[in-house]
Amino acid sequence: MNDRFNRAAIGRYSGLVFLAAALLLLGVFLLFPARPQPASAQVPTPTCRPYNDQAVAFTCCDAAHDDVADEYAPPLQDVRTGGFIPPVILKAIGWYESSNSPTGGWTQCVNGVPFDTGGCAWGIMQVRSHMNCDTTQFNAETQQQVKYDYRYNIAMGAYILKKWKWDWHQQNGRIIGNGDPYIAEHWYYAVWAYHQWTAVNSPNNPIDNPCPNWPSSFGGCAYQDKVWWWAAHPPSRGGRMLWSPVNLTRPDPALFPTDQAEMDSWPTWRWRISDPLPVHQDWCRNCLPLVLKNYRAPSDTYEPNDSFAQAWPIETGTYDSYIWHATDQDYYKFTPTRSGAIHVELYDIPAGCDYDLYLYNGAYQLIAQSTNSGNQSEHLESWVSPGSYYILVKSASGYSRESPYRLHLYWIGKATAPYPPP
Image (cartoon, rainbow, N blue to C red):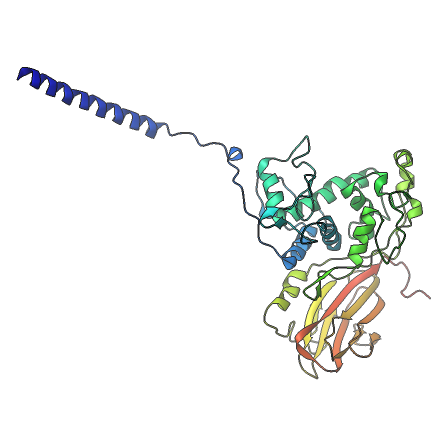
């Protein structure tokens, strides 16, 4: 009986000891919880951010105006450019860079997998610098965003083009014209360097870049000339051009070296060249709120704008709208703050319609017009000075509530004399 009592007592005592030990361990874990791994060691594999052509075009506009970087916080690489890039440059680079993807042009992912050419170059802008194959690399978080997020990829491409290419050339005296970032032609060296700053991309290299059929074809041309060609020949998808064409002027190829030895010895003054005229600007500031309307149920945009007094204020850019009925007239007001030559183009006029284009000065006096027959595109050019100008689109015959017309306004050069010249 005593043995049974002792065994029972020992059993109860052992149970109390085990319970006390368990409580002690629990207290230790509560007081000293396991330290989480640092964020840099816990980089989840993201999924490809959904995108389409419209989203890419809008992002190029945002990145051109340095409006994407604030969407991303450390530890991601800060991709602020601190300046402006003509949007058509980003659009054309992105299209050409990813044109060898299975879908062709503007490709971030294929079947959910980041698009890579096989040379550690990723996404729409084919970002390779500081990625997998470089000796110095972005951190893991940044690399993942470059691969999976089309907006960050485009912003990174803009950052590389501006901070590492444009700024470097400006600092080293390789300048076109006066080095104005708002002039698209002034980006020729930066775009050259975006691919490779070697004689392989010299337009005067007869072996690598004979460029025999320019401008009808960019086959055999230097990298930056191919980007120039795409800027002027935007692709179409779904029956619509992906951006408004900007017919960038190509510099005279004879101004550049023919081989690497000549390029390496080229003095600074040889790289400074005058404007290849005419020069062009591209803002695209209004493309998001304005073009987006055409992807909703059709409605007459920018109304009321049926008189000079009601003219809708616009800047340079592209505008889509409708002639809603037979007597509808659409007035737009443009208020330049400097003198220069402008180009106004009216195109995508619906089949069976004949729309005309007029330009008035601030006194409502007609100064230019374009009245081609049928649905031919309308074009006019004029010299303007600071003040108010009015653009009128109206129908000579027909109208459409389903198909919009497209109005495009842009500067065509840094002219220093009245346009057109005498």
